[in-house]
Image 1: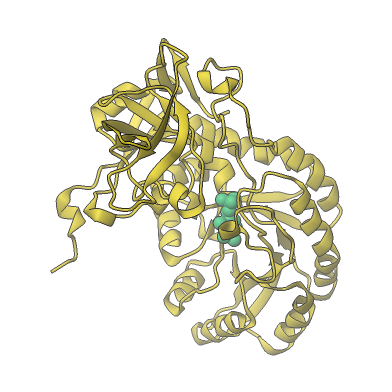
Image 2 (image 1 turned 45 degrees about the horizontal axis):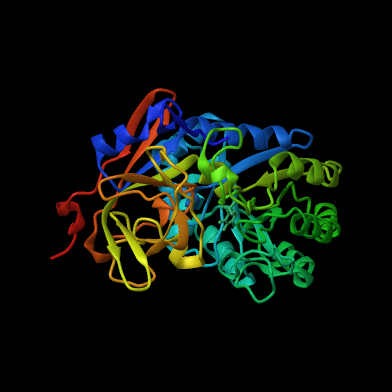
Length: 429
Ligand SMILES: *Cc1c(COP(=O)(O)O)cnc(C)c1O
């Protein structure tokens, strides 16, 4: 589910009218469906129920404190990639003992912070990093729990910027080198406790095959590491893809469902059915690190049309959100459905580019797309913007960050105020 549908001609998030939120809080505005976030978490938890597991939500997808608090209350752990994310998790009431720390470039300060907070595991991406972790832990008189990230050299068949499991990617340690590395570490690194093995082959995977390929390839290695080093967990990463095309729930009334070209859906039930039988006899705790799957379809970015410009070649709808608010289309050709908040009265479509105010030609949300002929003053929703949306927003062009609202049932709550101009120059002299 995702919690967005037309009711009485107006797009709603759960029981809340999005037109009224846009009027009350202004645009651009991120709106999240709390019910969708918890529903996705529970469905994944259920799909994996046949194997001992823990879901470590990938904080980088959407790190708002209220989103983290919602997931902590569901019993989620957290996969973090920086000291800042650990700080957020702790502020939101999350337990560092259920945090894994990923990333190729952890700094000394971040390592010390995470060691002192007692995180569950450092997911290490090179031998150099493992040795440095050992050294820092030794200085503090601590033992660092660690897993190495294996790069299984599997093609995730996703956009090249979000593929991470091939040998040419910067991530992880080559599959062939892992067993020897664990051997050296257990002999030479007294301040490391080898606790698990980690992998993550990429993001927005829309087919099950690469997941199966990676799990089957790495399983013998995992068995070996368990036998030799007593590892207790295997993190199989995140990367579960979501539907970006025609992304309003099927069955709900809406003009976009008649359109062709939906993504082949990788359902969470299928993910569980294929992977659980392959994992359940290992005698290990399976960790999952989903980000996009949990929050992607749970959020929209509301934006108001400012102007229409009919040029010689194209018609442009100029809206008040820009690539600084939602960079996915510019960064990796991300697709977002564009849906008027007021249900279109007719089936008429016009071919348009929807563009933002930023001084970059890459600042568009769609090009040459057939959309209802929404007019200046009207609002549209950029669908499926809950993951890597606000989290990647910037102040480029000195535009204040948008506000964020969390909806739960009939209640809407501002969970981040729109940045004001003073905040924009904070810390500058
Ligand atoms: C980004 C990331 C994830 C989450 O990826 P999604 O595609 O959002 O599920 C999980 N694990 C690691 C190590 C990551 O870097």
